Image (cartoon, rainbow, N blue to C red; front, side, top):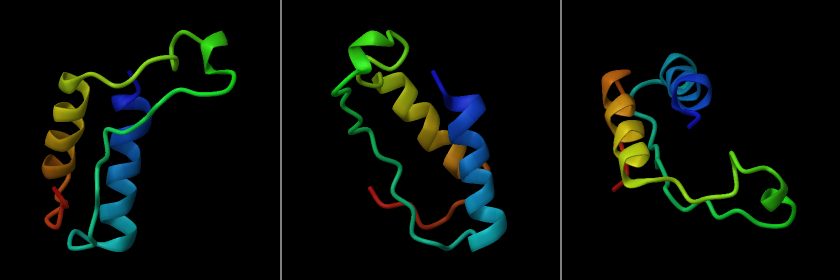
Length: 68
């Protein structure tokens, strides 16, 4: 997954630069297309656990206006 290398730093950047009340939508709609089948690490949908982890991190870093 890309939680610690990508998702968490981006969420922290949002809080630091845009503030904790900026409307944020953590989405779980990634769908691999085009050449993704050549890269197993991105050739799949995210798991429910990964999505829930991303939502938890969003709350932990202080985002207060998450869209459902």
